[in-house]
Image 1: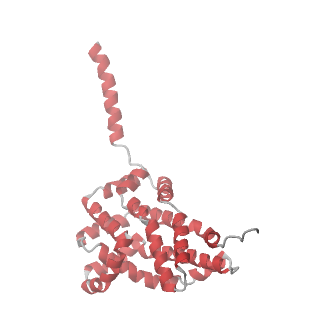
Image 2: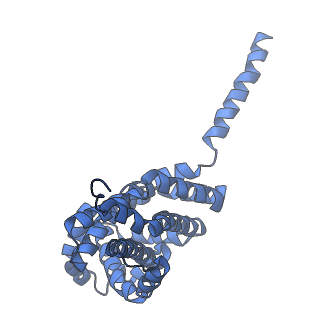
Length: 276
């Protein structure tokens, strides 16, 4: 009798462990195996570098102002906030089947290799290297299968679209700050409309930068491996995952921008004279 009473609890415990082992991955699990969490961790540095480059090109901005703008922008969102927004949106936007399909892809050797390449290329420390090799790589891949795959990649990854949105967000934050500092009473919506009017021009400039980055990032990825990646991005789960991640990041970055001008102006406002 003692043996029989022990068998049932052992079977139940075994069944529970079996169910846990084959449970569908959570949105957090999917984010962890993908390169997204590592790239999100780089976003403050990416935004700061983008602002630094933008201010350098525009000229006429004192270093203190540039530093303050960079500080306010990068302090307006955190890695944890962006990741939470992505996880929440993945949980509400993807089915268990889709989460599992995405998780399974990122567990493959090809996906891991590609993820490492994407994380490295996202690091602002490597951006000068991308720019330095742009001409060389454009000539190397001219007319090649790799070059022909770019349009397919760009559509599936929404790479240029996302980069243009980020560029507009950076310009909007800078324009809001400069307007606040100059004391101009320009409404945020008017600034936004003016910058949005440059979207077509930006798409051409940013599109070339995205292409340069594409050639650099996937240089050591074979055409066969890149083809598998594109198949994933174009699949139902892959497309849904990419769209949710991109939209979540853009929302997390752009939502705080409207209030940035006032924050920057307060940072740089002269201290009131004594006795006032």
